[in-house]
Length: 460
Image 1 (cartoon, rainbow, N blue to C red):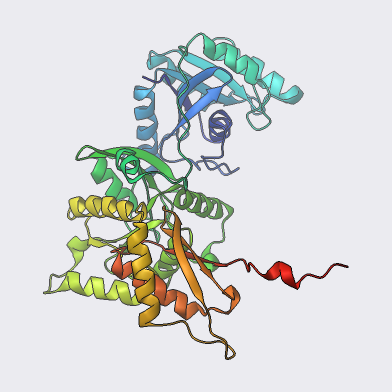
Image 2 (tube, rainbow, N blue to C red):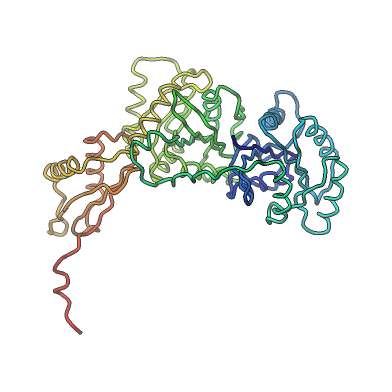
């Protein structure tokens, strides 16, 4: 089992910057504004030959019981309980503060090994602040600059006494690497939950986990980072990403919200299935349509979830009407699964998880070559491509080059002249014939080489 270290300290001392440095990528949002991190975030860290799990936490801060600040601290306390050791981070440029001293006592009471880290220690002021930290009684401070990567050797030396030797694990398969359907059925499914602010994304994931793992609030914009959690449902593994709400670009003004949105978009690109969550009271609004179009353009499998279904007055044929509305407003992902859920009450969760698995299976599907050829001939006979400028377009053959999503190459003459409407016809016919509901389908045109082209060349 991996050794786990929690990074703790007061707000804005550079915990998330250190987290990003150790995991080797910018997973956690970083900004000068205090309190950017709210939920705890886990990542796989590597420091030279040391491999361990690292947990980024909200800054230790006091707040009224039940407030968002207090619940952020509860998340931090949970991370401390899960950890095998702690990295207590202070800002060396600021020096010790009363809050640092109070939470040093808090760290000692955890009764776990503590590595004292004096961050932002570059320069004379940083060195003086680092010397002050001896007063905390947590041992020698490790002076680093997480932003510039200084002092990582000293940090490695301090951690070497704690972290046991671990064997390297294989890297994850690249997002779009083609794999067999059998292998796809065994791997954890990467799922991103996206939608407008306050659609209930975090509440849904908390219900799946059976615990208050992610902070929720009636206030829109509670989630900032894209937080990944591991879920097992009926024996199948899922890695689910909660994301910040996506608003219209014209309404995004603060730098921090721009970072949150960029983080959500990265989660979409990393995911294999994206659940687009809508509020049952305001579904299929303009921003919902934009988000669905983004998912399709990124080539991800899509599942539509209408949340807060417990607030809807029940009428006959409501689910059928949802299906009709979805196909009307989102023709580019026609047939995409749509599920009515209540993240708060747990209604429809089983149907949602089943829909995710079905969408994932379709996204990974490869079509039999013989069946594809028969379909192609019948599709052309039923509706031949139109003539352009009096010249007939010739479609030679089609082949599937990859799955994830299903992608095809169509060999033809005059690829630039084939109308987009005809490609839509082929796409819809493929979707209907081979039962590919909702998944993006890619058809790339390629002109077949002319075997007589060399005869046109004349020696110079």
